[in-house]
Picture (cartoon, rainbow, N blue to C red):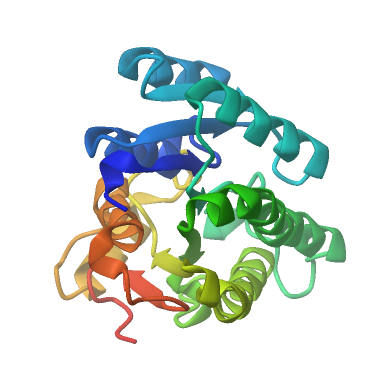
Length: 254
């Protein structure tokens, strides 16, 4: 299915990377559900700019199954067609500031629980809600947003990294389970992005260090990561599933 024929849900799309991904799908002609939890202004502004035939902003906490179900129903009513493509980008509240991170001595299980809920439970809820519509169209694409930190923990964010590693495992098991129904499940893993709300607290010295260590000598932008997300949703990736693509300028070579 061409990108212009797809109805795409991007979670956590009211700001940062999610907003960049949603904007990229809109530029490709997709119909886009711009999900947000708290960032109403950013989501609604993007939807109004695109127009009602191409975008709708819908509030839902993806960790709550009943809110996710209501969002999918509202999206189908708005566009008259089911969601075919799910981008699991939503992130539990987190700041990429290594100086302020919880260390091995201080981190609590509640920190892990919050990240697992946001990454794994959220992705499970949206994927399960999307299955009926994907099956009815005979087509489905799920792209989960990961991180290069579980291969190169240059800053040891214990809770965030563990949750994204679990999401990679879910990506692969879902790919194996859903592949026979023409539903692919892949992951795009970036490094530190310049700049999102989550990385706004990152010191400039960290950006400079990563840029210097990267073969392309720069820090990846949200728009550059969005390109890879669109690849997995596009016909070019029709034979690709269960994969994790690093988009970090070559910092991690996998």
